Amino acid sequence: MKKIGIMPNLSKDLGGIQTRLIIEKVRARGFEPFVMPEIYDIVGSGSIAEGCDFFRQCDVLFVLGGDGTLLNAARQACRFEIPILGINMGRLGFLTEIEISDIDHALDSLMSNNFYVERRMMLKASIVKENNAPIELTALNEIAIAKASFARIIHLRVYINDEFVNCYPADGILVSSPTGSTAYSLSAGGPIINPSMSCILLTPICPHALNARPIITHPNDLIRILIDDKTRDIFLTIDGQEGVPVKKDDIIHIGRADVETKLVRIWKRSFFNVLREKLTERPLDIDGIEGGCS
Image (tube, rainbow, N blue to C red; front, top):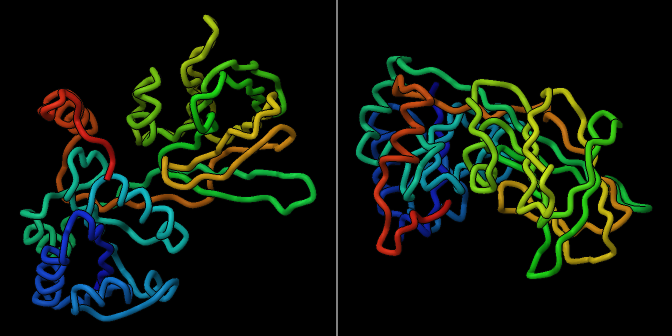
């Protein structure tokens, strides 16, 4: 392992101060740090690589930010099979592995191969629109089909392996990976799933039906969702970050992706320790609500 790509969220690291410091530490350990041109323009340090070349150069990827930053990086890095080390600069940091203060220990662990890589299942959505090529998207947390504004409830027909499951009158529906079970799905009343498992979780969002409950299904099942409303105010979003408008007669297929996210783990912590630390013992902010993804 010689080349380390560095992807910071510069809205969390104004002026790139921490990014520049990490680049210096990476270089001091004998690794070669790579950054994209727009990052180099701000931090003025590191080797430059652009687009796909950036990811092809990397043996490991350092992502500086919060969970949202890591989700965005994961969707880009997964097809290159690059392990990601998440460095928390956000608030929750559920997916990230270390804090900025741990960077020296993390680099020492990489040098001595004292780490392991955790694989996380991802999801793929294929949107089939009339007379158009399918739109394909990949997500680490979840794929959501939901109304885009304060409109009335929408109706979604759900099939699993061509078998009709239910028609949900709701604000929408979430199809989540085990990793995503502690994200939007948790807020919508879904169960917590150990991310080492392989399965797919369906969680209705504010359903207007007493029999609408979350469903856990096989990871190789193919989910098909049809929109039963004429409204055009519906979006499919991935990881809460990228969206595509969908409408009646569009066909949405969701299943397991053929790529995975690889997360570098330095600490030997159990999922339940992380769960307890992040979701039950973290302090609230002044409004009584912890901030969201960054």
